[in-house]
Image (cartoon, rainbow, N blue to C red; front, side, top):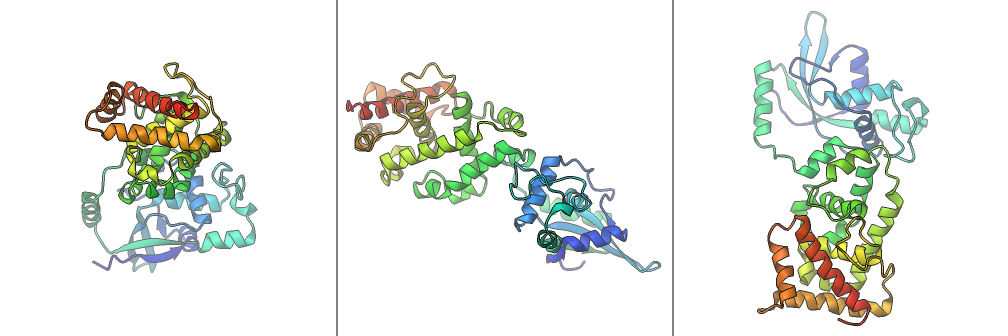
Amino acid sequence: MSSHKPRGYSVNDFLSWDERKELVLQPKFQRRDVWTPKAKSHLIDTILRGLPIPIIFIRQSVDPKQRRTIREVVDGQQRLRAVISFSKDEYPVLRSQNQAFGGKRFSELSGETQQRFLNYEFSVVLLEEVSDADVLDIFARLNTYAQTLTAQELLNAAYFGEFKQSIYSLGYEHLEFWRQHGILQDRQIIRMAEAELATELVVVMLVGIQNRRQRVRDLYETKDDSFPEKARVEKEFKAVIDATTRCLGDALRDSIFAKRVLFHSLFCAFYHVMYGIPDTPELPHGGIAKNIAAADVPKVREALLALSRKYRAPTPSAEVQKFIAASQKATGDREQRLVRVKIIAEHIRRGIEGKA
């Protein structure tokens, strides 16, 4: 069997092979084409941005009678179908995914952009003169080492619209924040933890305190085509992160709020104080301080750090004991989340009012 070192082949190479009928997109061991228009557009956007996509596997054989090389796509047929159909003007790039090229088909792109598209190189592993049994064995071995997809990775594979794009942008824009304060580690970010956390926070901003993962898929689905709250959510999300940074600064990393579960509650508490969490009548005093004044920042900081110290104290008060209990068991349950957010929001309010 030949070397499995990836080789580079351009989009134009695949278009040429397809025109000469030397490319078999659906051999007997392949799945049928099931990609949605959003998934296809997302791939084209990736190519136009010059970003990498997963390796394509091709079984290559030579027909000595016709002197033709036949290339069967073992893995990657949906990606190649999307590329070939885009080159034939069968669909446009979606505006929700790329403002510069949104609404344009291949023929409507500039000559320079068309050239960049055609020159884009796929990484391809060629399986030369191998049997069906060999192909199946190779993929059985590859799948032996494949990790089970996380819930967020499954969402990433299923949705490509405005809601997902906004969520991923928020998570990615704040990578340094997550890392600097120890909220997320690189090994978690590799598995899309920043997108998962941003999703959980935006769910609260849109529909209130929920059980963990409740309403998540529903929002990805219903807001896939249109996300009318996008501008507001992005603005408020960034404002809450900014308020958190101003009030706690470097102290965040060494506080209890660096723990992901408690950071979630801290964000929600700030959001409630600044804007009011919707559809959550159990939480009072919402939207009392849209902009936390500079004079109040030290007081809020001390109130939150006091809660952190009480949490770690050997004999915490009854209120703090309740907070601790809600932070250690069934932490994703709505009731436990409510307890944590209510207590943190109360400490923020006391700081603003000078009663900490």
